[in-house]
Image 1 (cartoon, helix red, strand yellow):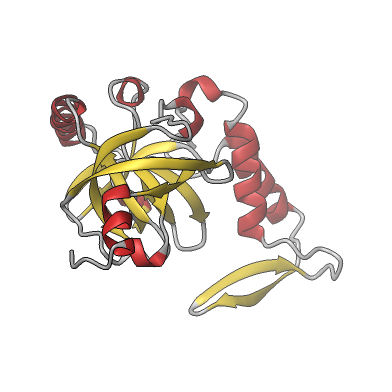
Image 2 (cartoon, helix red, strand yellow; image 1 turned 45 degrees about the vertical axis):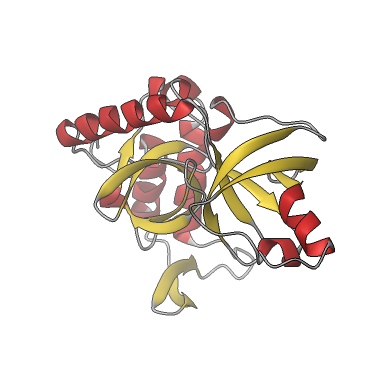
Length: 239
């Protein structure tokens, strides 16, 4: 079963289902997505969820073979600290910055290494929640964190840790990420929350001196300010 998407524990569980001829029913879970449930009225867990849970439990027993988001260095900043960042993405309620300093050379070198690695390593990979992997985006490969797993559709919701955007990626476009890819460069994307007035003045591709107000512990993001823009808004000046 070496090429199976599931570990031996999940495969054995499925084989036992078949041996016992467990009666099941198909239910629609969402648009065009169906799953299998047992006829036991008290069991509300789908078959795909059971298999995924078994996979997660089995795979976490060997954490040394996997790299998780908690393993990678991140940009840690303290309230009152200021630094220059490049804005690379703007969403409804936050913006994404990356540090604007000499890390760029290391990042370029890492991307070149990733390209060479994915050119020769073509085996699809089955990561678990919060694991780091290499995920494709517009024909290029990038470091990403697994946000959710859709076993039924064989796809993953990923967060690109160096760019701050998310995407749904099919399993064929996921590769295992070597551990040293997590140590060469910190996760570059920094999520920052601004007041709407200041955010509306920010432009993608521009550099700003950002001041940290506080860290949002729940998602490793920051409440920030851009003093130059805030001052101009207070003074009623055009930007």
